[in-house]
Length: 322
Image (cartoon, rainbow, N blue to C red; front, side):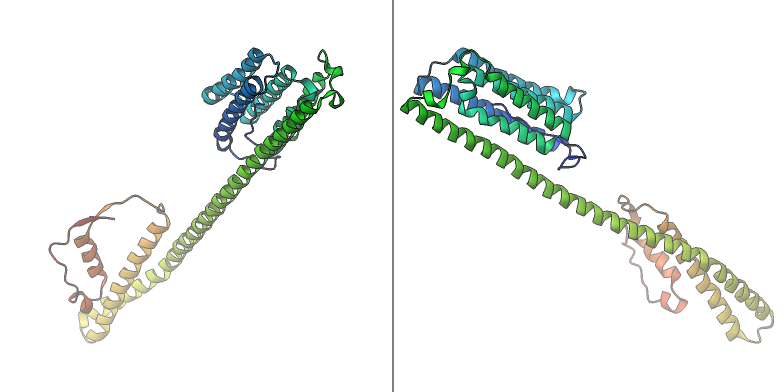
């Protein structure tokens, strides 16, 4: 009655979810399965006083424990695809369940319904061919129970009143266990799927924001490149005008305006240079140490002459981390 599910492939209901999501839960599920096997053997032997080969039953249950230890510890070092590993584990669970049933009642054992558990888990987390292989193995295992010595003599009609009640109770317990295991596992899958969908949506939002930032950066770089030519023309014309007016001094106001145009063109060029540098920079860079005084002095140099006097820089302005 050993049970295990895990990794999935793209053609499966779960897509390509990493097996790391499932294997820790699978290992825990198999520990619960092993504990249930030991408990069932103990109850059948001590409380119900059934004539069973307890030693062999304990050996099979111990094999479940050993295989789970191997799965837990050796999995990181195995060079097998996760889906292949899960198929092997589920097939082993079918074989172990067949051995337990063969030692305790054969095909009449009500716990034969537990064959549905590994088949259902394989259908959920494995591909079509792997799930079909596990289902075929389960069908073959159950069919093999009918060829055991004395299996033909078993039947519900041969049960006495007490034995029939015990058989029905076993059927109820087995059905409840199978339904519980499948239900819990499917619920775990639903939770994991919702978590993955939320992560995918968050990544899509981040990618959309990054794409917008890249588009804005490209637009800024293009605008800076396009504006460079007219600014150069303006600077050339203003420079020629200032040179012609400087020797004569006949129109100082026009000369002052020409020089103001040159200063503003220089400011525009500095701004465009920063835009181009920012467009090519890396988003989310690490913190840097900046001198506040240097930053403020750079801001003051870009102001108009009349506005520079209004900005006073404190001597204590020092470096900070940004």
